[in-house]
Length: 184
Image (cartoon, rainbow, N blue to C red):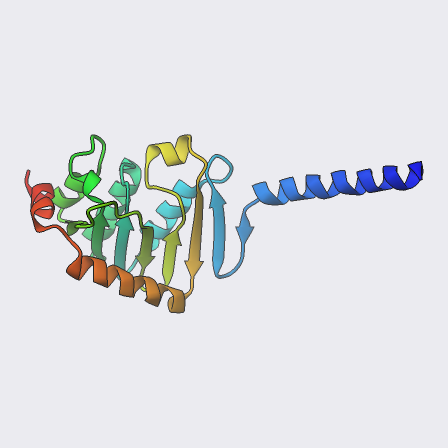
């Protein structure tokens, strides 16, 4: 009986240890990549995707304060990538928001008209790759928060995100707030 109990405890500890290692390890498949802040490096993964954009970049974010990511968006726009950024209304006057910077660099920016919050966090790259998850594009998400990020390389999934982005961009924006962001 004692031997059986010891064996069960040993198996349990081994399984828990294996789960802990797996949970902290980056999952890589040909079509999905999974990242966790404070364990992996989601910011670098996002930068790689933004730097690799060739045709289109559609971004819908609740919070966007990460200057490195904003610079990468601007660089994509400057190299001819059709770039569109849709943000929550909090980004009009938030201290570190990148909305004004993006707009002054010529990136089309629109502000959500949702009276509550626009809590989406996704980007569509070249109509085939989606970046999504709880990860806000902020310094806090990169340095302090527990966040997750998925990069999905699936054109069929990207199509659904593109449809939602188009609806947000075309019909659900606040003209006054959008103009305020564009003002110098």
